[in-house]
Length: 308
Ligand code: RIB
Ligand code: CA
Image (cartoon, rainbow, N blue to C red; front, top):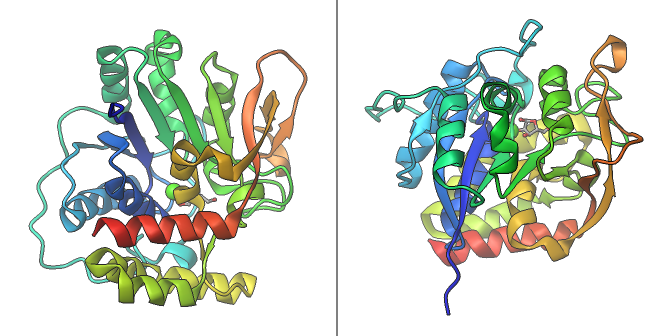
């Protein structure tokens, strides 16, 4: 008996690893993409929305794209990491030659509320950018906390951060939003840097994927070259990190991860703003602290190669 696919809303700031996450989503018949909602982060929201529209066309996806927050809830937007994702947010690959339609009607947080209410108990929110849209949705409709199937977030760091020694980018970009999202009474799974930094698509694997994975594999190689060069330059890494892919794989292959259940607090002030830390209290978050990174990267490559 076939199982109905899991309904997913992807809240994203594309972003190179966000693009790989969409590539993975497309390859999975057990995931149905209800909507793409965009947010500032790896670039300004106009750029991340253009990138989501471009990726939808390039990958042949059909989900609506709803633009979201241009800035954090209560602080100025920080600088985009052009040194990692490029000036255009997608590794500065050529995005010309496509007449893109305008974004779909409805602001991101409104559409999140409408879709969660339309499919009670069935929608998983997967957030792979700053959490501003999810916080705005909660503020507008606190009832959605009891209506989602779950919330999976790529974010946080319990060891070293990646934008400061203390904070990971998605949380650091809007600490107030992250604090509200993690404090709400919905089932949250956090996929922090402690796990995602072990999920590396090596250059050899990327070239093998381009050889064996058809158009999808060739695109994965093309879109990651600048991103991999940034990781080589800044981290001495051979390859690039599949942060956002790991969040989606936590839905389809949870056995690759090692969870810890504990409340998580977010620092919102001072030099440690955006830091996630273990807290007291009785509302545990499922934190996927460990992962078999090489197996996750292999799983990603096999999914892309087999789907094209
Ligand atoms: O810290 C990594 C996260 O920040 C990823 O989601 C990446 O795309 C950026 O948004
Ligand atoms: Ca992202």
